[in-house]
Amino acid sequence: MAVGEAVLPESIGAPARSAAVAAFLAWIGDYRPVSEEMHGYGDAEITYTPADPAPGWNAQLAALDLLSRAKHRTGIAALDLARRRALLTAQLSRLPGNRLPANPITAPHVALALMAHWAATSAAIDLAYEARIGAGNCRVLAEVTRPPLPLAPGDSP
Image (cartoon, rainbow, N blue to C red):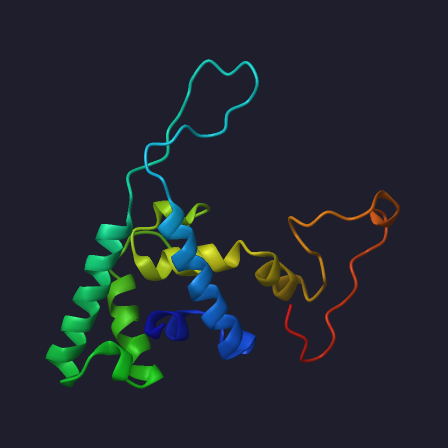
């Protein structure tokens, strides 16, 4: 949760950040490496999901905690938000690229994976467009041409 509080938007509030971390943990807990991926009808090549990144991500979390203890004499969860962000910023600045991966499973760091996982959610898309888009949710056909309703002030998608 310490990483989620540091990297997910404050504007979504603590309950939504907790829910995002819980959803990420459930998603990675259900991940099955080297599973056949979806492919189009008639595609000759069958592709498979990558190896499980969880062991590497867990090692990154352990390393962040060790770094926090070395620099601040306490674990990362006990640090204030500014110090947590500073530790994470230092780690992430060493990585190539400057955008979130399209697929969180390919993220080189657990913080990026968490952010990418959240950014792909319907709630994050609604927040980005300030409208109730409901990505991935079915709408009745009669409503397809109606623009999405705006988010109410202070509304959390």
